[in-house]
Image (cartoon, rainbow, N blue to C red; front, side, top):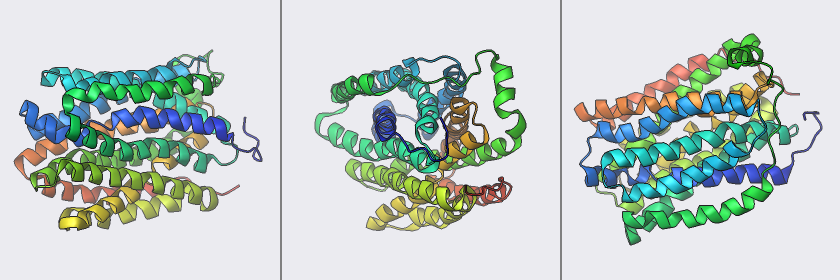
Length: 388
């Protein structure tokens, strides 16, 4: 399904975006509640980082095999079963009696999140027509927007009803799933069933592994910066006296900005190419990160928006670019960007927490501003992207 003059199937793109939104809506509950979990279980910053890092580790483990299976077998188990796991187990984290049971609830929710991401992202390009960059940005917007709305909702909910009431929130998701079971189509396989895992990897990535690896490395480093800020920004500002609602607002501004910038970046990439958009976003991330750390008072709110706008802008572009480079394995390609890259970036989050236990959160986050300098150099070696 890829004649260049084909129009996007708006209804299916909307349904796939809604899958992304509702799954990540529940996944977004954990980070803004970290200050409460730290207080409830008397956690160190390294343990707080472990909550996020372990969930990203599961993304690292689960998404690639799911992407492989999704390219071989037509099933809706991953696309619809994954969100069900998230919306059931993440709310139960509010009533977990111990840190380890909390970690189990978060882990099972993360497995559900890892199940639907590569499958649904792989389906987007089939229904995007010639507007892959913009369609992918709409799909990614569903996830980033939910990470903006979710923290606001859950901090309001917990502030009024407490952690123990969190299981009640699953009613929202179960209602949405009724619609999705009717609206989401059966995935179409990529014709790789005759190949094993290694054979499929060779067919999909063999001729383009070098540029794919470059994109993956940039996206993994970007994810490390984003996850470190999303994890420890609430902890930092909680220590400085900001309220739970203010912390939820900061997280929401960061992620809503990414939803907006992802659409802008996707539209620009379809017009002028992916590479210049990558350059601009990563270069602008550096001053925005520093402003967020060194501004005070209400100035941190626009700074959080600006940082999220620049840091998250290239998230849909990484997925779309790798799907262009490896069109025969769209789900496997998506799992590289939403699983391996995101997972590896998140796996390094406990390192940020460990360093912050010995230094300070602000100084460690400031050190991360050097990472976009590295990614800018790597982007220079991306393949040229001529517009059709």
